[in-house]
Amino acid sequence: MAAAEPLNPVDTPEESEAPENESVGTVVIAGAANLAIAIAKFVAGLISGSAAMVSESAHSLADTITEVFLFVALRRGARPADEEHPFGYGKESFVWAFIAAVFTFVAGAGFSIYHGIETIVEGEETGKFLWSYLVLAISFGAEGTSFLRARRQVAGESRRWGVTPSRFLRLTPDTTVKAVYFEDSAALIGLLLAGAGLALTQLTGNGMWDGIASIAIGLLLLLVALTLAQSNASLLVGRAVPRRIHNQIAADLASIPIVVSVPTLLTMQLGPGQILVAAKVDFDDDVSGGEIETASDEAERRLRSRFPGIRYVFLDPTHGTAGRNHVDGGVE
Image (cartoon, rainbow, N blue to C red):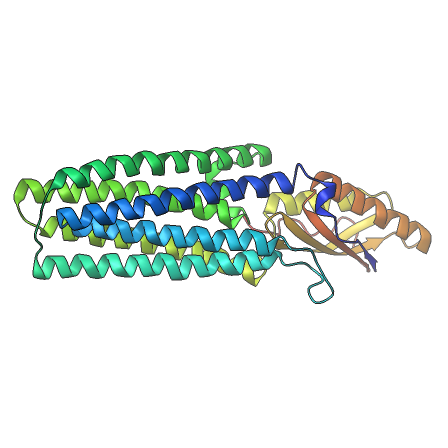
């Protein structure tokens, strides 16, 4: 068995520390914006009596709490490996991101739906709409700024990996940027829904429209919560790398001169930007143990050179069939 030592994060600052720092900045900016917006929306909701505005304040408060969880996820997940956790704490990022998705988004969704139903059933006293429209406009600008930063990070990462932004968002193990991107997208849509509910209530004099807008905001939050929870649950269980990376790893291993085949290749995301590779490799029967060790070192060097996020490489010499390589594995 040839095993690779864990890669020190400081050895590849361009690939590890820079993305993490960018994610921290994205989370901090989004959190600060959401807290200020939540207070403004709540005050506007009290003045105007709008259920949609109060729901939007709950939405922004939930987003703020989400950013706190995501900040904790980034910090705790970046701790180095130790004897108790030899593969590091990367998966703790997925734990906190899962809690953020389930607790804050579902809590915000539940409050918005309940408040909307209550408004439709019991009615509401409407007041000054101008304050609500003003807060919605300011909030849209603030949320838009946060969204543009998240979108810029997504666009940069997707170009770096040569994939579309939608595919990057579906497959990335960076749960923080994914959560902020979806959260800001939902926030912008929620603001439009709140504005539409306010306008229809003002035009018709019927508060039912405001309640419907509140319910729609809640359903939007619930959709985002389920999407993020499912993604984080998959990473917690132990998701493989994307198929293109899997096939490239298999090709790199098979290209070693004394390798006959790679019958089994297993990968797992240990955390954002942290990958484990384990493979059964059929080496030429006529080579010595020393040559196998040298080939294993070369395989490790090639893989880490191509994918600096690979932290561990385990190669198990085994019998196989020439040309029978484990390809088309991983996540499609």
